[in-house]
Image 1 (cartoon, rainbow, N blue to C red):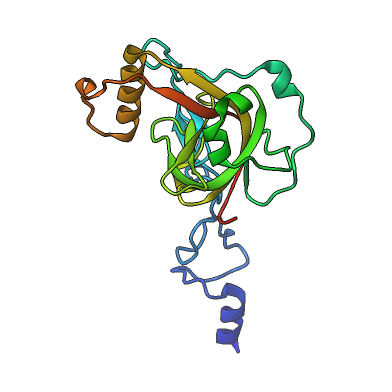
Image 2 (cartoon, rainbow, N blue to C red):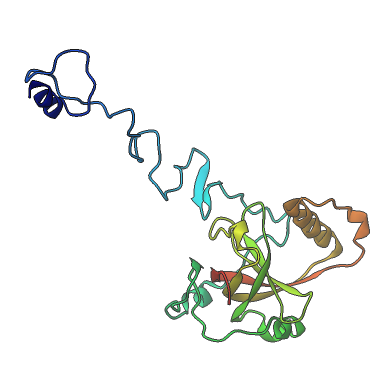
Length: 231
């Protein structure tokens, strides 16, 4: 019976001294039980790591601080939206997916093919477009391209760097995006700068000597978007 009393009092803990009422309490966790997450050196579950100096948290965790738009290097980097137009919107629609910016407020979408065919008709207007995301900016997540209803064609959705950050994981997903239509007629020098910047973003080689014609850019300067797995 004395042996049984020893087992009940001491439990499963193995000690070198005899067990008694004066034994000190056990404060350390058993080596068979790992410490719980969320300790001083471990972030809580499902939480991005804390940002370091010079960094800002983004959609995929910690991102580098956004670069400042330099129109001398890239004339098409700036997003121009009329503040009054940006303020004149209803409540965001309830939609499945990840919301960016103001979300989506318009109920009907414009076909990308119609917008591209007659940009003058839509220039300066607030529109909604939708489709599969073909590509995403690799440097700052400040734009993505949406596939048109015409195969092989796309429309760029551009936002100010850092205002919205689109993750690379958006490629292949479905986007519903809203913003103002912008048409830019560039000269040859500006065209070369824009194409050189795009090549740098995508890690492609670029030879300005191959550019012989000025570029007209038609895109949607973004106010909000929703990106989801499928239509």
